[in-house]
Length: 134
Image (cartoon, rainbow, N blue to C red; front, side):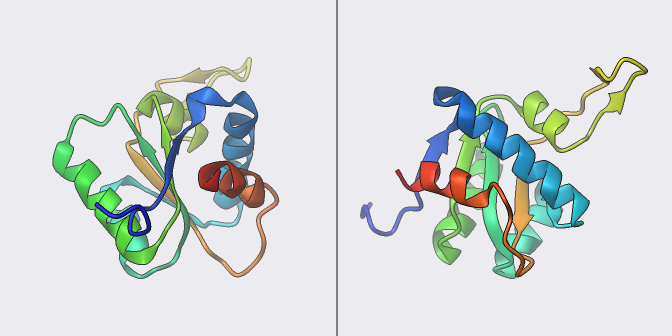
């Protein structure tokens, strides 16, 4: 494999500041209705070249799924960020119920999300992308 052909992937576990920026970026994308969640939505967004960033969970146990997402990111040069836990990604993507105290309950795991490029600059996208490209 060539170093120039592969899209760099980075793990969030190594840097808590990137985790906070990633969570804020996902929240902002949800507010703009620009977050694709799940296999169907993410592959459509990647195939249409609408993605500004793809976030993939390392705990995904479907090897074909991981290979498909990585191949689409490589094909369209989409930055790929890897997080360690799908439950954490599901909570960030608001795939959960929130109780009266503000704690997340009934969290649904999410293997992949895509932040769509809407043409408007995201506040935390540059922070996350600088960490991905480093």
